[in-house]
Amino acid sequence: MPAIAETVDEALAPIGDGIMLAVPREVAGVPMEATRALIRRGVKDLHLVALPTSSLQADLLIGAGCVGVLETSAVSLGEFGPAPRFTAAIKAATIRMMDATCPALHAAFQAAEKGVPFMPLRGIIGSDILVHRPDWRVIDNPFGEDDPIVLLPALHPDVVLMHAPMADRAGNVWIGRQRELATMAHAGKKTVVTVEKIVDGNLLDDPVLAAGTLPGFYVDTIAVAENGCWPLGLPDHYAADLAHMGEYARLAANPEGFARYLEQHVHARRAA
Amino acid sequence: MPVAPRDEGLVNTVSPSTACRDEELLADVITRLIGDVRHIAVGNASPIPAMAALLARERGRGMPYVSLLQSRKHNFFTDGGRELFDCAGQGRIDVFFLSGGEIDGEGNINLVSIGDYNKPRVRFPGSFGSAHLYYVVPKVVLFRTEHSRRTLVPRVGFISAPGGSPANVYRPGGPIALVTNRCLFRFDRERRRFMLESVHPGHTAQEVADNTGFAYDSPNSVPTTPAPSEATLAMLRQDIAPQLAEVYPQFTAALFGAT
Image 1: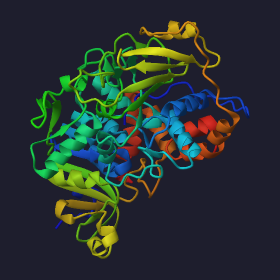
Image 2: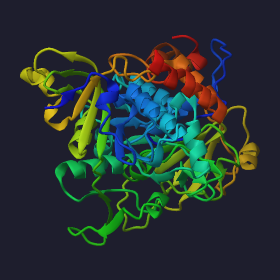
Image 3: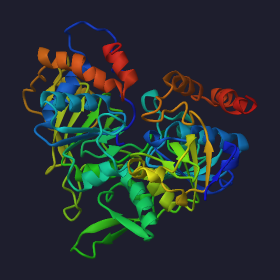
Image 4: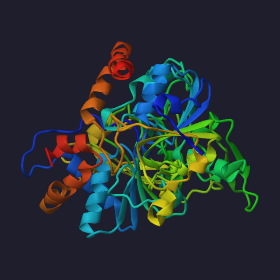
């Protein structure tokens, strides 16, 4: 049964230096409180896989020096513009980038959850993404004739990290319609979850809730992190803190401002 | 997903009651390009295409289906982030929108970088879903609100997704048009070449030529893009703006004021 940890730090113990860490896209619940805890702990050399894109989370981790390899389809702050630390790191070649395209990452996780070595996907042929992804292959469709198709190797992250609205004491996690969270947990070797709250009873007993529940079977550790996506939003629960995002975009535009942001909003919160 | 750098510098905050804003004109143009379809999907960082898609649905009294990828309300998907792509792969999405840090005359788009890939001079956010959707969605509308020689180039520095493919590559989809702040280009898939269709009010064919880095075809006399009707403007401001605000609060506030 998953361990319900006393603190977020404890729950994050499986996330060691150098591992492949998978995280979800912005609307699926990005574990920002856990991300700040990882930065405070000084995690290093992560192979970060953002399924399929990222925003503030990847930018913060990169800026704080936690990332060695980034595998994703895009990083941007959306309405707040380019992700400044991501952009700077790529231009300075201080991280290794593995560019992807969204459905290719989804397919690679689906291959892993099925226990098969690869998944085929249409498109991609003729894109320069393929030129820079020697791990992706093109074969001739064995069921067709002169029909080239791309194969994506299965992605098996060491740890999957996510945030969800609630879990029960048996470690079942309610993810609602964010089904890719289940796929990620199925594909990952370990899964760490932060939640808004722990509820009484068993989520699997209610057929309505059960349909949107990730069974505790796939989960290793859980911790409560109220408002755990802040300053990003958790759909149906709370909106993004736009004023804060604006402040981040402004400060992170240069290394000094970013250092000040880390000091104020990441490191200072440990003492609080 | 797909779609790149932000649309820079277009939002104007003056708000005359009936004068048409650039964004409203572009949304109206895109709505005409959408035509009669069943399902329009809109990716990340695409406020003007989102306006156009919502306008098409409002005019059709609830049809076509509209899926705004980042929206909770305007999005029926229940199978996670992959459902949009699965839907597209099956041919269940008729229209999508893509942009590019660079777009070239063959319809190739660059959402990745300029210069050495491993240490680029310019880096954009990334390809999003373009390297799949550009191939499988029948009507892809390209849009870029900075029409300049910097963005519309002879040859992109990195092909996130190509404008066309060899005959043996599965490709039911591709570009049909490019909408910019200055004009509308149609795309000829056979010839892999743009044709100037109309210039927007206040712009000229000469100005388009001066600001376009790639070669394209142009008729002797270039029509002016029709301005949106009063009814369309009223619908955009009264009905569409509040819907758009859920996904693009900043854009909507800057364009329409508080909603």
